[in-house]
Amino acid sequence: MDYREFVDQVTKDLKEVLSDEFQAATVTARQVDKLQGESYYGICVQPEGSNIGVTMNVQGSYEKYQRGASYNEAVHEIVGLIEDGMRNHPNVRMSELMDYDSMKSKLMVQVVPTKGNEEMLSGIPHKEQEDMSLVYRFVFDSNKNGMASTVVTNQILQQYDITADQLHADAMTNAPENFPARIRSMQEVLSEMMGIEPDMLPDEGGMFVATCNSGMNGAGCIFYPNFMEEAAEKLNGDFFILPSSTHEVILLPDNGAMDYRELESMVRQINETEVQPQDRLSDSVYHYDSRDKVFEKAQRFDERMQAKKAEKEHPKEKESLKARLDAKKKEAVNLEGGKKASHKAQTAEL
Image (cartoon, rainbow, N blue to C red; front, top):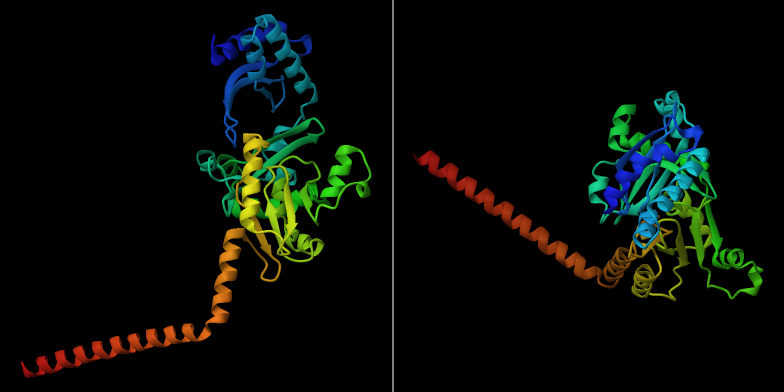
């Protein structure tokens, strides 16, 4: 049987093998639409009296079944995963779900690539930042095992009778408190991963890693209020932003040592070889101009600087061009005035 048939059959059989504590739960098969191409057809189990259910993508169990595992083995694996999820899932009261003033304290921001997510974004309040889009989630629980959250949709926005601007403002207030940004040196990150002292690792040239304290969907922290200014202070001025994934970004000082084209080539290669498709953010490299306080693609920054340089080197050419344009405008005005005078004279003669 194909995957959908497998899910439908497991959904029918699940009630017979669930533990007694979950026998009163409602079990359904449903389509789950998600960002980053992660939509799936899965099994939803909602405990009796609960407003939130556990929806499980059972693709992994189906693949084991395809490779030779028995149907019963696959079902018992799914039961174990679902029951673990149900025992640990947060219990949220309906009154809380219906009250935006309560829910806004659970807001976090997530940044995703705009390209490839257009259909989903059409039904989601979002704020575009270059070729990325900022979306908003309600987080019910977050721990070392993962995050229980739901994306805020246009339908949810209508139910709360709030605007996208208000949602964004509330997210910018609550997300930094719920999931504070962390900017750490690459040495510090590597030492934590490898379990050795930072001074035993080579200097990474002022490279920093930025994410939120949970590490999940942490790349969105770069759009927190004052993040850019604080990062510029830590990196001593302008810096590049390399989108490592949707979970974190790399900050690199713009000290003239690297060209943005080299950095873009590196980002593309890493995305193609090391980053899972669902975690990819962008192939672009971004830049923060600490003097003008501008976040933009590094290419745009380079073009802007080239234009400023040309303006300084050839100011007379600009003035000469302006003078020629002014002369043309004056000539056009005089010509129009002459036409009107001639028309009046002809009218008088008649």
